[in-house]
Image 1: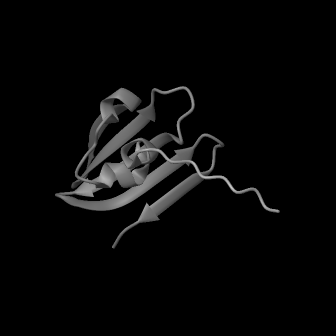
Image 2 (image 1 turned 90 degrees about the vertical axis):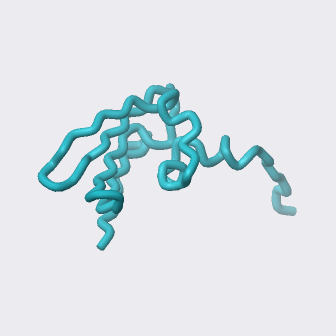
Length: 88
């Protein structure tokens, strides 16, 4: 038979350090897990996040905002895979 196993943990812990957590109203643990730097780039503000924890899901993220609207996200995971999401 197939392995029947379930892991249960609080949602806040499971979501911590993921892009979904940054877009939610609660950014609990953000400054504990990442160093955050903001740099203006034209009309946008770009937030660069670098992981502080030893085995993060994402080692680097960049979130670009124009006003209060998210324009793009760049994500690099611990295996070096890169994802670039552009929102229109």
